[in-house]
Amino acid sequence: MQFWALIVDSFRESRDRKIFWVMLIIEIIIAAAMFCIGFQPGRIHILFGLWSAETDYFTGMSGLRHDKIAAVAVSGVMDVILGWIGVSLAIVATSGFFPSLLERGTVDVLLSKPISRSRLFLGKYVGSMVFVLFHATFFIGLTFLIIGIRWGSWLPGYLLSIPLLVILFSYVYCISAWAGVRFRSATVAIYLSLGAWVIFAGIQGIGDLFDTFPEWKKNRLAYEASVVARWVVPKTHDITYLAGKWSGAALSTELIPKIEEEDRSAVERAGQAELERMNLSPLYTIGSSLLFEAVIIGLAIWRFARKDF
Image (cartoon, rainbow, N blue to C red; front, side, top):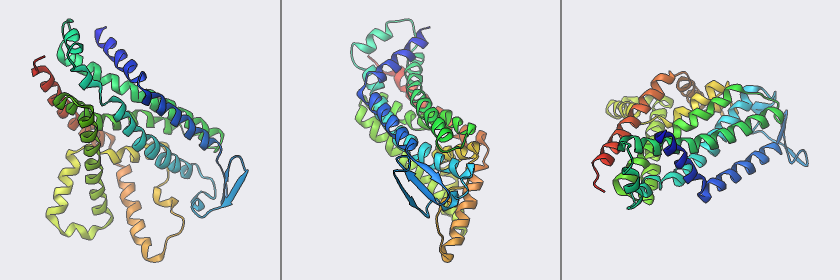
């Protein structure tokens, strides 16, 4: 019961912050903008047809195939809007949870109750997950309806993006939680967690380049170091690949409008590399990433348990 109370208290704390409502407003505005857009073969309509234009960018959607629309939904809506932008805002919103918990007066009251420090830490941590779960459910659910009603594609697998986004947030937030306990500063927690995210993405991006340009693998030392680093760190890019696979999305390379002949082979290799990532076992990509997260959270709990207040 105390553990649940901590989760609820953490969610209420995040709800009381202005950024909670800012995120909600942004999500509604984006969903409204999506509702104003419509597709027809070779054309895109804005504001319910008030303005329309021919476009090569959506040439690949000329048949309005569900897999093409799913690719737009996953790559644009889920990955960029709620993935990069939404998770970044969520990190900012929750970065002060542990520094504020460690303030004199607050931590003294909580530690006076019959609850272990590890449970106290995990209650706050899970409360942050609930914050992201709320926004992910609201936005993915809303855009799911818009994609079905307005764009004519019902994508049940797209709803699986909800738990995937929560998992993506947890990959980054574990760094924020550790930094919050270690440095007692929300600002430091934000910088370290977002910096770590860039490093995670960079390592996986370098691995993708090795797959796209096989000749790079001739440098065995660099390639093997990339493989090891890619296994160790959380695989943030794979969240998008899994969402695309479960949504039945086409490859992102299929949305490229026109390809020059000299660039075609590189694009084909990129598409093959993307297909291979989509076919990875969720147990491997999520399991190994959660192992990294468990180590970081273990260090944070150890630090929290040893602190004198």
